[in-house]
Structures are given as C-alpha cells and as structure tokens.
Image (cartoon, rainbow, N blue to C red; front, side, top):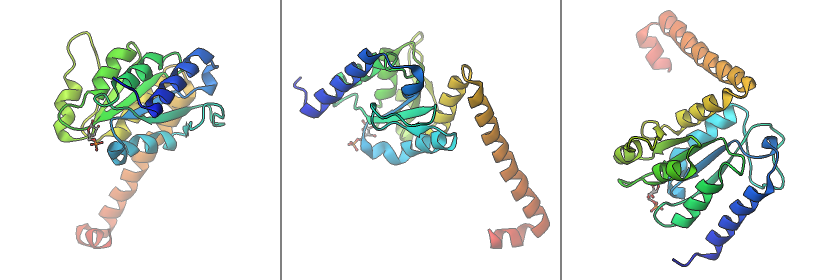
Length: 206
Ligand code: RP5
C-alpha cells in the first residue's frame, strides 16, 4: 500500500511524539478519533462534554493549552488508512493518552474495535455513529474488550472517559459531580415550573 504524503506526515508526527517522552501534564489525556469527517457532527458531543468539564483541545503538540486536562481530535479510517490507525493506536500510550473515544459509522464500523485491539490495554470507548453500526462496535470477542455507548452518544462516551481519568485525578471527580448536580437543578427547575403553570400553560410556554 502506498501512503499519501499527508498520512505519512501524520504517522511521523505520532512516532515523533511517542519518542519525545513529554511530561503527562503536557500531553493530551483523551484522544477522540473518527472514521470520517462526516462523523464530526455526531462526535461533536464528545467535544462538548470535554469542554464542559474544562478540557482544552490540543491543536499543536509544541504549544499545549494551559489547562491541565486536554484532548486531541483526528480522522483515522480503519478501511482507508489502516497504517494510520495502527500508528495512532500503537503510539497512543507513549504519547501520554490515557483513554480513547473512537467513533465510526456504516455497517462495518471497525475503527473502535481495531483501535481497542491495537492500543490494548488502553481503554477505548466506542461510539457507533449510526444505529446500523451498533453490532459491529459492541460485538468484540471475549478477551478483546471494547466499552461502547449507544448509537450517537458521543457526549456520554466522553463523560465515561473522564470517569476513567478521575480515578487518578480527584479534581475531575469534583467536576463530574458538579456537572451531575447541574443536571439535577435542571430537572428540579422544570418540574417546579410544570407544577406551578399546569400542563397546558407549560406546553404553550415551552
Ligand atoms: C465510516 O464510513 C466512517 O466512520 C463514516 O461514518 C462512513 C462514511 O464515511 P464517508 O464516506 O462519509 O467518508 O468508515
């Protein structure tokens, strides 16, 4: 297989980063990957969840964001760029990543499960981008695990990634709790308003 110059450059970038041995605080903690940029609208939920929890996106390894916790985002196609997928998964741990969120669509959504196998034992959370991708993402054989969320639930995938990180970083537990408390407030406020206005008026004013 002949690699394109762009793929070659990305593989070189991953390998160079792996060799650099940067301190943990300067490397991305979460890696978001997806099979195509056509998956981005669905995978945007992962971006939103991480941003909500104070993570910043790394767009230049030489200029990491100020925030202690960060993530990176790439398009990696299992079918079209298998060598890129291999380089990404194989270097993930050495590049300082602690957990990956991998999304793919189609009936043969192989990126999450192949990446889980290559990057093992790094945890990978799979996102089936479409309903029809669900079986291919959750159907890993015994001994080759991949945690997966329901179709399209990239927001939850990122929350799960932070839950994993939080075992080693108590400050992330605080952020997760604050986020969850915020959800309670939302339900409480809407419940009180529904009760006060009554069903008809609530529906009119919603
Ligand atoms: C999958 O094929 C991708 O994850 C995407 O969901 C689907 C279609 O990709 P494009 O043809 O839009 O690039 O591998």
